[in-house]
Image: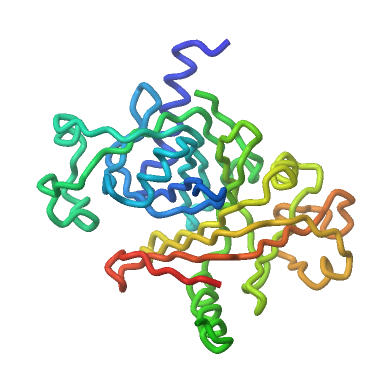
Length: 147
Length: 147
């Protein structure tokens, strides 16, 4: 049985693993079954409810893929530290202006030059179900965290 | 129309993009639709036929996923250079000893301590259909290469 303390510790571990990796690769499924990934700048930590948030263009092909198939993977790679993390979960678009203001960070202007004035901006909420990670300290044996 | 010269140039570009990134994250689909990724050390360049090869454990869960659903994505991340590459394609297991000898590299002993004497070893051949990449030189606008 996973207790709330276990879960808190697992989330803490996950946050530590991705703390210094800014961009994850978000993989989604096209209607024809093909898998595509793109870099997404994370804005903030994994939340206590096991969610990770990104900003996205609402009218983008990526958003359409997610509306068609909610399964996503977000992977984080730190080649220098030989650390690799896979987050499996489901995603949904959220268009809550208050939440956007809470989540916005100035560094995101690289991707959204107009910031929160961008009319096509939306949030992507990823609900993480499982995390797998590999690092040199664990001799590259996969470690699994179920959330 | 894509000529053979265009294709050669596109492949050359792709090889340059991933040349100094050793590990890619291979994403596959579980039977329940969930997406999982794991690090894979590339052994060699992308071939002139648009294929990329990895070694894998034949009895692994990852191999079973691929036999069930051949669609894969391999992403490469170089955070230091702000360069991100997504390769979309299909994969198949290959158990050709001559090909294994051709593709084997000593660095792979991190993952396969017994080397080619490992009885459970197999090759994974990824046929790349599309590559997308992002880097600071292209202002993070996605660049697409169709193979």
